[in-house]
Length: 288
Image 1 (cartoon, rainbow, N blue to C red):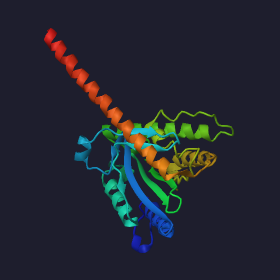
Image 2: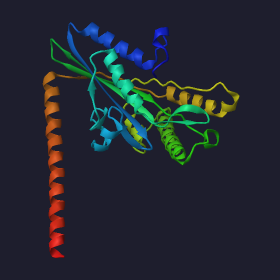
Image 3: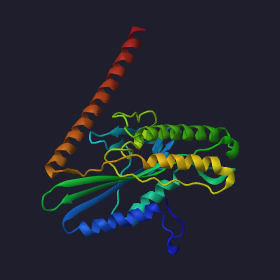
Image 4: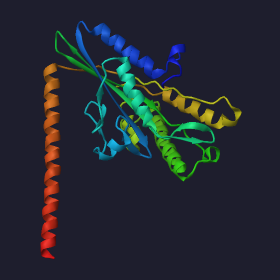
């Protein structure tokens, strides 16, 4: 995702994407107001971590929750969202998040990723003439590779990590297999794993999706290479139908106002539940 030495032109996907996003935004700046935001999470043993927060800050932060909007777009409640003013600003947030990702060394890889990583860029353009707002989301997903414990020779924590990685990849494979059928079902369950739920807006429907599969040329890894290529073949069969997410400026304001009211109501419900629990505890102690 990152690439190696930028001085030699060895840019990875993320720096290339950042440059292209802000190149297009610059072309539109005479007619539109453009904004870019980002967040980064990892899925580590089926738990989501906010990678734009330090480990200490994450302990105090509210729990992350996956939500799916009516238009199918996936969002993460309570995640840290940062505005990016340019490509370097976007990459600064990306590099900060990468430093907090779980990695571990084993017999096959000195810097093995122990989690799935999702870096999402939220884009918004507002027409200076009509006031129409167009929103979009671009997600870069770095999946941890499947592992065979006999080859990696990891400790107990490493085994738990590997089992979680393999389990989520298996579920992702099931969803992709269902989507790649000639006549896929109108409903495909993506809620059995947090990974497939997080990726649900990229798997079929209103999205354009590209998957890069890394394989090994070594004969010893022939089995893994064959499985990876078969997985990639199924991915190519998925049909998406991308559409523009467009609404008027007034509708966007009303939606934001509605969401604020809804969040306030939820917070009030939680407060009342806490008060009720306190009263129940006091009554119980009085009765004793």
